Length: 491
Image 1 (spheres, rainbow, N blue to C red):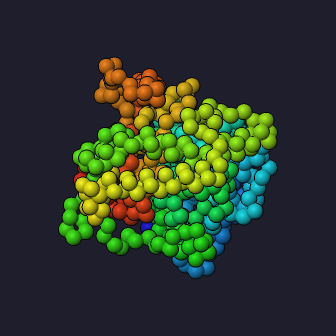
Image 2 (tube, helix red, strand yellow; image 1 turned 120 degrees about the vertical axis):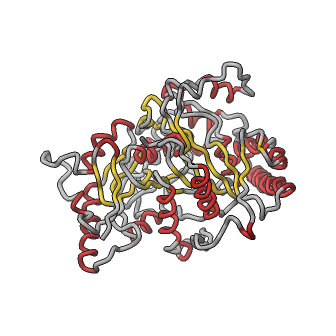
Image 3 (cartoon, rainbow, N blue to C red; image 1 turned 60 degrees about the horizontal axis):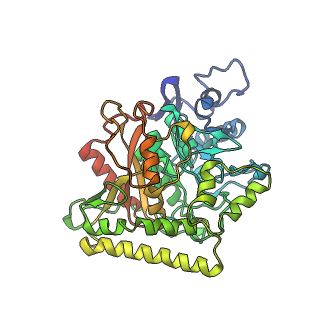
């Protein structure tokens, strides 16, 4: 049978994605990771121990669990002559707060060290039932609630393309590992995929299961959290979505929408219409749709709403978890949960009022689009993933995240994709540019194409709520028509 492979870049390791064919899952994981006779070029766990310090992306490796799992899969295949499921033998990494059974799950808080998961998170269970091998957990930001991956527990995760810059956050650790070719598929969310030149999906809330994840804001319904897949290919994201949704997770989780993966249906070119993609040049101007331009001029209102409902406790909940150990804030989470203008502790009535404003904003945004384009005509937006490139490591204090948080507020679906890489000769700094505000000034001041050379540049494609399948079909057409990425962002 045909064997699929993935390769860890220049380190020379190849590992079968599937355990059939000329190799088995346990063949690549069989020897004791402590054995000095095991070559790092034929042993993924030892190799990861060697390369992880390059970016500080590994929280812990799970050799015993991975080896036992691989042997189970080999025995299943030997007995039944077929793979267990669609990701049989696939090694996957998971962000630390997506906890496996019996392992510590501190969520980036010093005071949470010692807390353990009673059982695997539901999304992990689904992948195990489909044949995956969980072999690594990655670090995470304090909280995790930041645009960079930094905590007092783990330190800072750096970008493998240029370790003087950031991997982004709060899932930068997963993307760093993927960019190192240390994992073919990760679970986190799409933001830092832009920093590392990868594909990442942010689905709408309640499409994927989050039972079993740890977070200090669980139960707060103002802005709901979600998870998503990240991979070096668009196909990797699709495999993840198909695997999860074909398991019908809504049958055991009443929080989820009972919507299967609808890739057999056309979501673009309906009734013979062309693919329509609006271009969002900045968070203040969108061409060519005037109605969307007008809606986006309300971004100041959107950010005010976000500030209120991201931290309706006024930062008290975050402060309490830090206080349990005497752990200090880092600059990123201090801004998000304490120092940003507008952060305040809301009364119950205040929570209701701001949640209502959020609902009104979502409605008005949709109406603004529909004035010019009927809901059936517009397909998606192409927009920046972030307003800046990965900052130089000593400047990790970015306070603005409008290019991603707007879609969180609207609960729209978004997928990031690689386009090119920084070239100092082609991307010189605009010395005549006049910044709009202090955040814009910070971004311009810390843009240095020489120091940030070879960093991937990504965009994101955005569609309405629960339209993940449309995103995939639209992005495939864009890739086929335009030929992105124009440069290999993982080279």
